[in-house]
Image (tube, protein in one colour):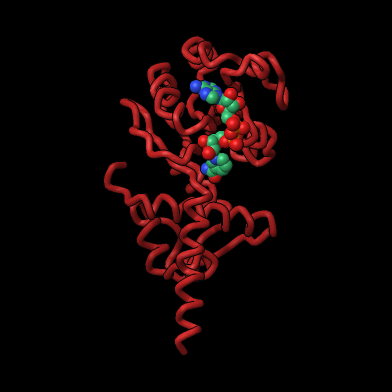
Length: 213
Ligand code: NAD
């Protein structure tokens, strides 16, 4: 796995979304050209990304949508359910807890944690909020694989360490701070403000260019 570029993994997720949309529209066959057009990459890139994992499709006949979708689900580890916890049940944690698309790919919300006594014991979307001190026991009992980390920045590293020590192997970090991946865990950052800052950079540059032409 170590030799698969991160960008390839990101594009596989995009190809899967496109294939799911084709499948929903009852389209049965597709091509690297079509996937490339929808994903805004070249057909060569699509074929190269898929080639890391074997041979798919038939030259000249393209791919079966359902078969390629199933293969991508398998490659991405999405053919099995993952038990998910939310750590930090504030505004963002609560919003994620009721997001219906989590379950669509079998990400099953099995637990939620907070440190605020006013939140501990409440139920959100059928899940009881537990105190963060219960993380070690709950991770083991509920076999939690992945945590959505929605705590304030200053609490993120300690919470990630506690989750990994308890056996959580994937952490999606929403706190706007870089955390070190604890031993045995992968950490993926999600930062929508960083996206806004990148947009601001591109818009500003294009406006400056317009002004000089
Ligand atoms: P919030 O203050 O509403 O909620 C944070 C919650 O974390 C609170 O309920 C608090 O009691 C709890 N908490 C604090 N320490 C904890 C710990 N050690 N263990 C468990 N729970 C703990 O904040 P919010 O608006 O929901 O934002 C949550 C985080 O997400 C912040 O870091 C914020 O900057 C970030 N955020 C990220 C994005 C994004 O796109 N990535 C968007 C908005 C907010």
